[in-house]
Each structure stands twice: as structure tokens, then as C-alpha cells.
Length: 144
Image (cartoon, rainbow, N blue to C red; front, side, top):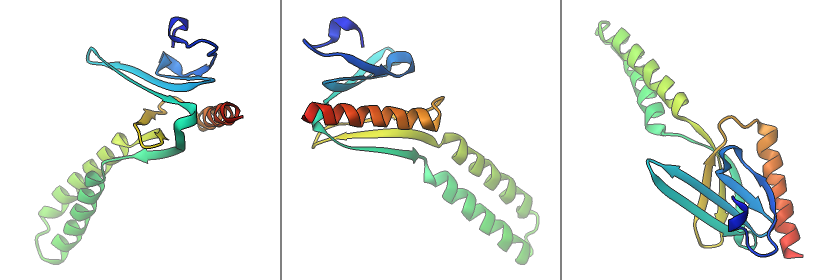
């Protein structure tokens, strides 16, 4: 967040790489541009209700791979052994896609408003925890 966008008395505490997430003593701001379109979400610290670190994934890939592995086992028992390698290969491909598309994200939820989700790609676990601690400290200070 550039200084020209800071409110009166507002101080920048920390920013993520690429300035996607900015934490100040008043608010948390998510600002990203994708395909030429800006997306900005700003949440006042007093309105943050929860912070969560989680994985987002498309479970359809995992479910598909499990179904294919089960089908491969049944193909052996049912005499359709020519389907076995096809089912195993496709099952492995779907499993790889599942793990490659999993995203480690931080979700910050406001009271009855928007959520901020951002990927932690490139951030170490300690860095994520440090950011959460800084956010929680800023929230605590804004309430006192």
C-alpha cells in the first residue's frame, strides 16, 4: 500500500511480497490485479472475526482417482485385465493433478462481510504464523 493511500494517523505494519496484502494499524487490505482487472478488499481491524490457515483443493480429482483405483482392482477380478493399466494410469494422473492444484491459503473473515483469501506460495510456515501474530497484535491494539 502506497503512503498516499494511508489514512490520517495510519501506519504500515507489514506487507506481503508483491504488496498483495498490507497490514496497517487500522486495516487489512488485499489488492491484486489479474488480467488487467483490479481486485481490492479492505477490512477494518475491528471487523475481523477469524483467521484461518487451510488448504483449498478440488476434491473431484481425488474422488476420481479413488474411483479409478477401485475400478482397476475390480477389472482384475472381473477378467477385464486390459482396463487395469488404463485405470491405474488415469488414477495416478488425477491424483497428481489433485496434489498439484492444492493451494495453501490464509482466510481472513470479517463480521458479516467479505473474506480475504490469499495464497501462501513461497511463504514458509513460520512466516505465515508471524503474519497472523502481527495481525492479531494489531487487532488487539486497535481494541484498546
